[in-house]
Every structure is written in C-alpha cells, then in structure tokens.
Length: 576
Image 1 (cartoon, rainbow, N blue to C red):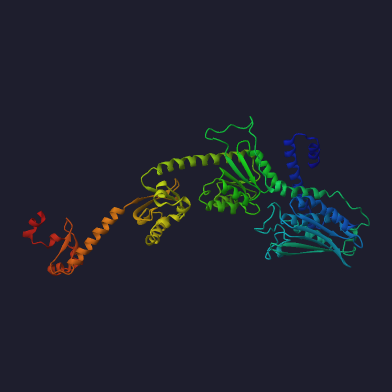
Image 2: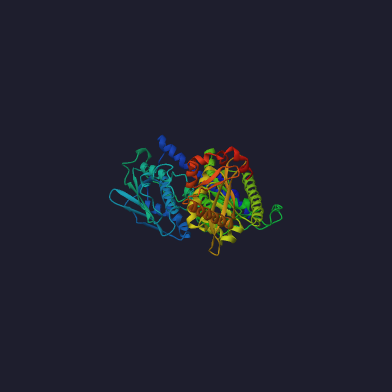
C-alpha cells in the first residue's frame, strides 16, 4: 500500500492532492508501526521471534539513529545531546531491535518534554555497555513508576504533546532488551525529568548460538525511523497550533436564510492530521479555529464564545471531559453546543459523554456526511433556541415585575432587566446564587433555605424578604416561583417573579402593632372583651371574658358566640 502511494506522491503536482496523499501516507506509516509492534509481541510470546545478533559498532549506530530526531527537537526549541565514545569492542545486537529501542525511548522523551534538553549517552565497563536516555520533561509520578513497562499502561493526567499512542512502546522496549540478555530501569522526578538506563552484556555467551552472526554492516536505512519521525514532526507542526482561513468561492454552499455570516466553530484536536482534515471538511460552511489541546480551546471559548465547540476527548493539557466541565460551570458557556469526538465506542462511552454535558458524542471513525449533519443540526437548534431566548428576554425585560429562571440544581441562569435596574447588580453578581447577596442579611438564610427546600421537593413556593435597591435602601418584596417540567415530566428548574409589597407590608406591621396594643390593654381590664367574626366564631377573648362566661379561651374558640345567647335574646343579637 505504501509503495504505490509513494509513487503517486512523487508524481503529484497539485498542492491539495499532495496534502491529502501525505496525510494518508503518514497514517499508513503509523498503522504499519502499530501492526509491526503487535506482531513483535505475538512472536515474542510464541517464542518464534527470529533475532539476528551481529557485531555492531554500537556507538556509531546509536548516533545515526538518535540524530534522526535532531530536527524535530530543535524545531521544538530544545537541545538534543548525543554523547558517545568509540567502544573497545563491537556489541552483538539485533540491529532492527536496537533501532526500535532507540526510537521508542527518544519518541517517549520528546512526547513528555517541552523545554530543556534530551540526552542520549552510551558508555561501557568491563562487562556491559550502558545506554542512557535522559530528558528534562514532566516526569513520572512515583505511584506509576512500578507499572511503567506494563502493556497498555498510560500515566493518567500527564502533560504531553499528544494523547496519541497505544501504551505498548515501553513494554516492547523491555521485551527487546530482555532478548539481548539486558535490563532496563527508570528513575524520575516530577517536573524535573526522567532517565531510562539500559544495560546490554558484552560478548555472545548470553545469546542463542544459532542466532549469532559473525559479520554484518550497519544498516543506515532506518526504515522504521520514518514512521516515528513523521509522527513526532506532527507534534510540533506550526508550533502545535493549526488554524486556517477558508477563502470563499463559488463552490462553497450558500448561507442558510437565517445566517448573516458563516457560523464560527472552535476545533480542539491534538492529532495534526485530524485537525487538518476537519478544517478542510468544515471550512466551506463554517469559520473554523483549531487548537491542539483543551487549555487553548478553553481560552478561545472564554475570549469569544463560538457557535459550536468540536472537541476530542483525549488531549494534552486539559482533556475533553475537563474542558466540558469548566464550560458547563460558566454561565456564559453553559448552553454552548459541544460535540465530543472519541475513539471509545459503545453505548456506555456515549452515555458517559452525554451525562457529562455534551450535546452530542461521535465515535471515531465517523463519516464526513454524519459529522456535517450533526454539526449543522446542533448549530441550527442553538440558533432557534437563542432566538426563542431573545424573544422571551425582550418580553421579560418589558414586564413591570422582576423575573428569574433557575436550573434543576437551583442555579439561577436568568434575571431580567428590571432586576438589574432595581438592585444595581450585574449578571456576574446576580446569577448563580449571587441574587441572595441583594437580600437583607436577616432574611437571606431563611429565604435561601425556603427556596432550596421547594427546589428539592419540586413544589411552588412564595416567600417575603427585604431586597436592597441600588440606592442601598431595603424594601419588602414577594418572591413566587413555579417548577418547570418538560414533556417527559423531567424537572427543569423554576421560573418566578419578584414584586414589591413594601407599602402593604408596612400596613400589615402597623395593624399588627395596633392589635398587640389592643390585646395588651384588654388583657389587664376587668371588662370582658371579645372579638368575633360575622359567623360568631371567636378570634380573641380576654381573661375577664373567660371569667364572665365561665369558659376557658380554648373552649370559647370551640364554641360559637350565638350559642352563649339566651334564646329570647337571639333574634335581637343576630340582627345586630
């Protein structure tokens, strides 16, 4: 597959065609590397691997292999140091295996090192040669060191140039070194770097006699090196940041009627080839800004929220789930459409993404048609939702009362213009639970508890509290809320209003004070006094009235005034 592709590449003159062919070629090399690695493991486990141990000028061969990385390392702003001296004798190694050992160790060092240097050194003593690969990278947590050579083991949360990789490179290195009768060890300090040390015995006594050759020239082709170098070169292409402005052409699809301009997308993808492919695919219809990691994506989104975010799950700096969590916690980006791209297939993986707050979840590999369809659908849905919100907001902002909306977790997502005009708060101050800061300190705890209780029980509520106006004065308000449910009966939060009741509240307090004065006066008089309703039920009796009637207050409240009147006087009193 690769040879015919190389032939086509050598004859292709069209720039865009070459870009596509080179992308296919690079990924073909990656696939070949992965398949070869898996085949090596299979042969090792079956005891069928055919080694060819030949006497090798290991210093010269190691320099030749390591030098392949110099361009990529220097392009990344670091130094590659190769320190070797002529050895006292040739070392018996399988040159293909040694190539894989060097390439894997250097690729690993480059992946986790962002500044400083990578050093390769080769020394010897009487019995061994020692290869050391040292970097000034991120380091490995102590808890992960015992498992670093396990197959498919990856250090969770490690900062790296990419999350690409199968997690089997170091395991293969250990197996290849074991076939040479050697050992490999590692020491590491977080934020300072990592050092791998390989020891290979001299001579041939430790090797199978039937696999030892007497002479063999050093191979300078480094066939496998091409796959490694193509891969690492992508990690530093354009300084890791890809962004492309697509020039409008007659071949571009027309804008939809509701579009004033192309919708803007932010693409977060650490694989350079995938970034380039998605930019090319999406650019005819959308303005695409592409970044190689989650942290840069978060920065771009917060600076200027796009119409949609398309993000990979596994990325350096900040992965897709951590990025999504930060966006959903921010009121400004809580409803931003987010499509997650992941190599993890299956219903469980999809559900995990949707539960985390993703708008959609697409499994790699996906078809171009499917991606374009989903992106278009979610942008169109977001536009309709935004138009509905704008319409609602225009109505709410022109109502004479303050209006608010909350999420199911009681987080306030909307306060209308009247609220901000009255309290002087800004959205940053009022949204979330900030609205409580405008409530009188003596009322805030009670008000918050009442609302949270109603939210938990999903029932209507009303509460009264003093609300601070922007001039600093507190006035009484009535806050009423109703729970919202979708078509399936799922709780969506509350919608409510706040109206001023200050004059009514003051009148009620004045009336209550008058009643209290009345009660205090008649509590100590010898004149029996009572207050009843029109139907004759008592609402107040003083002690003198209890003595006069011979009933206790509790008994009188159970009785009726008209039951105490003599039958001959009944008609006269009823008429009164």
